[in-house]
Amino acid sequence: MLELLVVGVLGILVISLSTQASSWYVHAVHEINVAAQLNKQMKLAAEAIAQDSGAMLEMQTNSSGTDLEFDIDSGDGTAQWGSPDTVIHYEISGGDQLVRTDLGTGIRTTVARNVTGLTVTVDGAYLDVHIVVGYRTDQQNVNLQLRGS
Image (cartoon, rainbow, N blue to C red; front, side, top):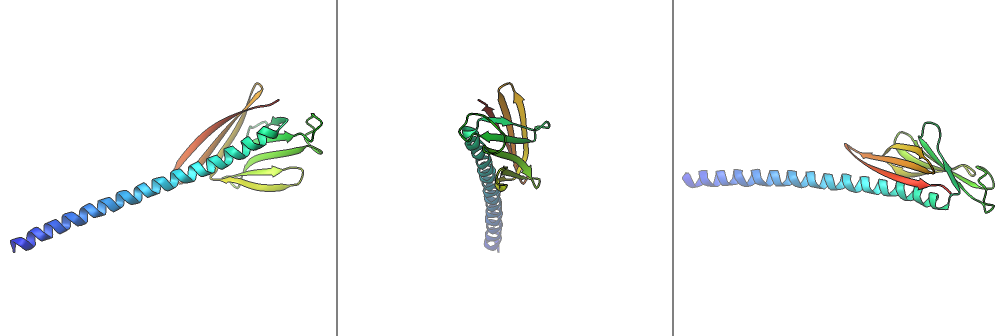
């Protein structure tokens, strides 16, 4: 009888430890998944904006600082903000999608998802772009400083 009691206690101890270990494992996997998702979306957003800013002649934002536009020159060295230049517009659409629109062709592309904030402020010759990406209960921020020509 004593042997059965010892085996029972040890069994309960093993079950308790394995339950705690599996709970820790599930929590760790969840955290890794959230971090990977945030990093992926943040990287997509920052790379798209950086790529367009590298080719731009001028940039601007609206008065509330919630969008970003780039004028990519057609070769004449003057920003027309229309044809023949390419004008690229970034904004948050649908509440959490960073959308890139080519205003000349009307082609809209979702660049990144889970983007909950886009704030653009003018700082002299620079535009400071603040991007917030949120996934579940976590969020990440990145600041880009773009310089116009």
